[in-house]
Image 1 (tube, rainbow, N blue to C red):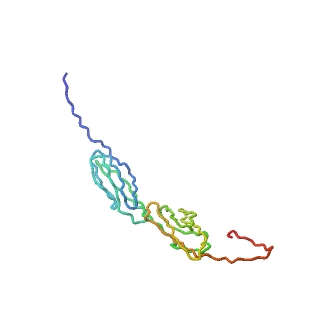
Image 2: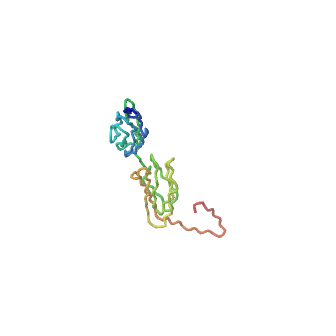
Image 3: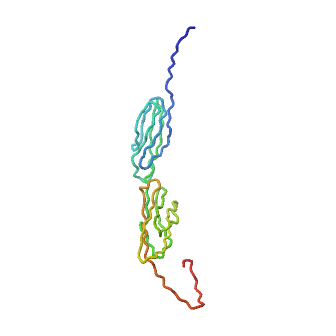
Length: 207
């Protein structure tokens, strides 16, 4: 019938890990969150100068919000954050993506009233979307590998010059774009030709 009480004190878990050790940030440096899984004291030991966090230490599993200064370069920027707890270190590698750009070799293209096929060279470090609302410019294809935009220009049936603009817009940041201006000459009058009966004339593929 006798009894005795034994008090048991359990030390905190020695688990120390991160929910992600490879992190990608946008060129704007938008916030990304990871969790420090630790039931002991932890702290940030070191980090890249352009990387920022909302907290620098904790004593329990904690969400950490990571941001970065905007990347003004057209190449990725590497970075890191090193966490430490009870002498153990874990490093999260951070890649901040390059600033998008879209450029054209020529901002304006000219074509005569007959129209036809034309192409434009462009350069970008991300995929682009072609915005074309013109009734007389047709987007045939844009090749992101060779960076060529293929267009078909319809014949101008008016006796005046016309122009329109199509836009190449970056898919990851719609504020990054390039405008291509197309100027087409007025309608061309092709002279009529008369032939004697029995005359044989070869017809080209165009007309």
